[in-house]
Image (cartoon, rainbow, N blue to C red; front, side, top):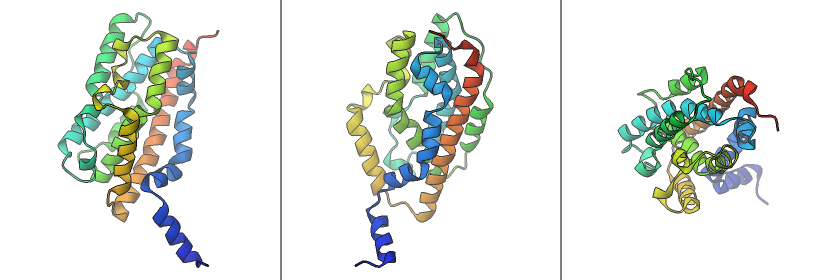
Length: 228
């Protein structure tokens, strides 16, 4: 029989880093995914203008984030993942321009306080481990739940393909294979204990900030809910 300490070491050894991330952040992740704005957007009870504002709230985050990725692309652990085909900022901008040109029932979105708080994490002196957490949260999310968002907003609000560049990852090939390879790399990176803590703390914070963005958008669009 293994002693308790030996059992704990064995479990720790068998647990992948990605599994640790999911275990540590599961509640925060679900809270973000289940925010009423996202549920309403994906359920078809909002308007195309709500999707436009969703893009506008995220656009400055991707722009700032990708500037930092390019600047620190050679630093581990980010160097394992840096891939220009993942960049989204230009795609988001193209979607925003298309929708602004074709939507009449829209309003000028003021900068969200939650977006500003999110941007506050993306400082010039952010550690590589924390910056890698941003890479993981945004892109792996876009490759997963983001694909469902694209399908549903296209179906519910008749958003055309020309305005769904954000979630088009044709340039990386098989999305399922890419996600698996991403997680494999994540599990193999020789993170230090400090880097692991930084990464996990940042992921937890980012899920909370994402939920704050959705809550703020929900306040703005609560009156626009479509009653069927």
